[in-house]
Length: 479
Image (cartoon, helix red, strand yellow):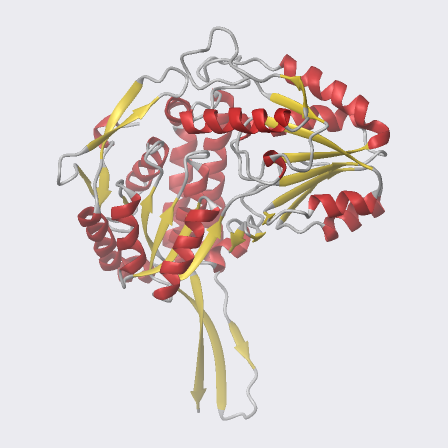
C-alpha cells in the first residue's frame, strides 16, 4: 500500500483535513500506533458529495462494458496486492493473517462479480393494449450513494457496497470506521490505479456527528447504505426517511444454530467451534446461541470444548495464530460482562474466560464456552459480538424452532442434520435472511446477504445487491 496515499480521497486528490486534525490507527494485539490518518469533518463530507455529484453523469454515461473493465481491474489489483493488504488489515483490526488473506480474496470476488453484473442491467418490453403504443421499462442508476461501514470486516463490507454501486453507474462517498480505515483506503487506491475517474469514489473520515448529517441531508445523496448497529440503523432510517432517501441497513444479529440428534456430532461440534470463534466472534452472522438436542448434548459439548482448547491464540501476524485479539477495549469489556452475567445467573463455564497468560498487553480473551445458560442471561438476548459460546438444550423440533426465533434479530441461522425433511422444514421456519444447512460460512459474492426484523432490510451480493442502486423507469411511446 502506498503510505503517501493514506489520506482523505476527494475528487481524485489525496488530501489532509482542512483543520489539520488526525487520528491514530492502533494495533489491537499490542495497543501500539500503526500510523496517523487525516480526520476531517462536515466540510470534507460536503466536498466529497459534490465531487461525486459532478462525476455522476460521466460515470453513468459510460458503457456497461467500460465500467465492467475497470471494476475487473480493481479486483485484479486487489488480488495482486493480497499479501500487503492482508498485513495492513491484521495490523489495524487484529484478525489472524490467514483470515485477512481470505477477506482480501473475498473483496476481489465482489469486484469481479459486479464487473460481470454491470453488463446485465436488463430492462423489459411490455405488451400494450393497442398496436399504437410501446411500453418499455429500463433500469437506471440512482445517483450519489453513501456507504457507512464498520471495523469487523474492514475490506469486504465496504467492497460489497462500492462494487455494486459503481457497477450500477452510481458514484459513491465512503465513510469507513475510524478504527480501521486502512483497508478501505487500499480499495480506493486500487480503484484509482485501475482508472476509476476522479469523483466516482471518494473517501472521508471524521466524527459521525459531523459527517453523518451531511450524508443524510445533502440533496445529491440518493442512497445510504449502512452496516452497523441497530441503534445507528434506527437513526439512519429516521433521518434518511425525512429526506426520502433510499436506505439499506445491515444491522445486528443473534444467529442460532440447531444441532439435531441425527447430525454428525463430531463434524457439527468442530465446525461450530471454528465458525463461532472466527474473527473472535466479531461477525454479524456469527453463531451466538447454540441449541443442541438433549440426547447428544453432552457429547457435543465435550468435542466443542476440546476443539476450542486446541486453537492457538497469538498475534495475528504470526502464521500459526488461529485466534487473535478482540478489536478494541469496548469489545473486551463487553465480553467480560456477558460471561460474568451468565455465570452469575447459574451458567457453568466449560472452557476459557479471562486473559490468556502472556497476552495482557493486547485485547486478548480466551474463548468462553458456557453451558446450562439460563433464559435470563443477556448473552441469549443481546448481540455479544465476542468470543462466547452459550450451549443450551432442546427436546424436539418445535422447541428448537421456537427458541431460535425468540429474538428481535433475523440475520442468519444455522442447523446440522442428516435428514432432508428436517433441513427443509427448519430452513423455511427460521426467521432470518440467511440459512446455513450443514454450512457455517454461507456468505458469497453471488448470493444475497441481509436480514429481516431488527437486522435491517436491503441486500448486498447477488443480482439483488445491484438492484439496490438502480430504479426502474417506465417509458410509454405513442406511435
